[in-house]
Length: 303
Image (cartoon, rainbow, N blue to C red):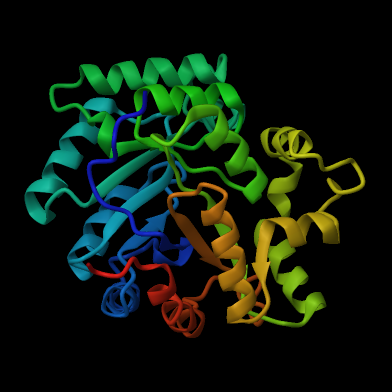
């Protein structure tokens, strides 16, 4: 049975590579604005860990009402003792507003760190053992996994608060929720393109997430969801992109968010992809401001 997440996540948050490098004043100002506009969850990719926890520290300082989640940090080359100490320091400075997400990435990531990838679920289990054994452990309620397949999802449900799947549809969440019950947190990544033109929106989606479709783990999961080789072409077919990405105007994006939540997702981490700058990272402030207008639709009314 999964552990309850120790900090609160609302229905909708922001996932952003652009919020890495949070020591930069423009990034900190953006985080402050997101907080002021009502976003209460920010996600940044952990990648290989370089500077990731420092970014979390800066974001927590700039946005005093948010929970910041690393989604997700590759376990290879990370020191469990050091991570436990850093989490304790973040809590002392900012309160318990940090969630750490962990993933196995791929064999190349393990090799670069001089480690053996092994069997992914077993490797992750050993990593969680090390976190539990640290002098200042990362509690189960403050950690999630990057998971897709049923075995890693089972591990997430058993030993963490839940998981953060990438490139999934509402059908994925509905199936996992039926299989594992109401307790584990399911917080999918959802790419968003605020553009009503199909060609521009799909081009932005392919520029932002298309390369991941070639990764074996994602291909296997998409095949489990019923997509065929005709869909799993470089960049993804139109059918696949339309299933994975919320694009269109605000009403269309709102409908897609609601579809995921109705399927059993607890939280959606919205990753804005800009059609005007698909190949260059830039803070998508106009799009974030537009998305902030949707927050009241997904916030429960106060009794």
